[in-house]
Length: 399
Image (cartoon, rainbow, N blue to C red; front, side, top):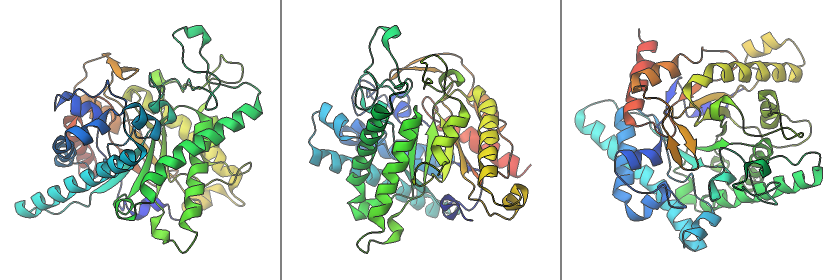
């Protein structure tokens, strides 16, 4: 059974880009981390530098670049002083700038007489927490109805779990579903812009109920694709990547003390029993320190294998071998090693780009559980990191 991502990525591993917002700051000296829109603010004020940042990653070897839309939502645009019409226009421009960079890169390759690389574009979509102030993608402290309580500077009063309040939990999923659906519709309803997008990346998701909300939002979007004679080509493959600060998922269990385990995350992402939501084409980890990946990947694979075995009517080994199970892609794009603190960074180590790339490529081994692997970087990874990663991947493929 074919995975939709495998239709656009015919080989593996695929190298993706790095931390776009932090690259705009580090390489192009833009002051954007103190704005509600972060890298999207550069779309308004410095469109030329957005193109140059994309080109830097493409020249470094990226086969997929992400749009500068991670922070985009109606609430963040409103906080930044823009109207809903402005929001749709600017978000569309972000996609078009990525497309322009790709065209420039292709022209460069033709002029240089080098083989033209098949570059893809991913729509970057952050969690609800990225729309808050301070940002909450690393803690998941969401205000009602999205969560039990808003963030407070009194640490003991913060929490991200509803306990046994199933009504509030379901209302939260409803609210998060609407949040994600309305931002997708900003672009879905613009056919020319939507056609540029090859896949959708839901990133840095800190809560299992938000994973379920994203799946529900994509289900509602797919309903629109299938309605009224709309071309099925408007459906896009998509992945969900989770964040593990210091190697630990942010969400607590109902007691408010223990942490949600990887098995619960996998269940939220792919189970069918209690909800008829579509499954993502890929599962991943982003904006997490690279040294935590081996343990997390092992837990992902163990939980995914256990879940797959419960879904097979015959021998699991045979089903995997004969491709009778839709296997997800594994998506890994760790940060550069520093510690994230509400849109600022505390330096943890000074490991060089080559060491980072080597650690990433050695963090996993090819497994029949996955349809393929996408590798790249998140915050504080630059085109130099991606260049080192590309060289490492090529040397492993062609020793």
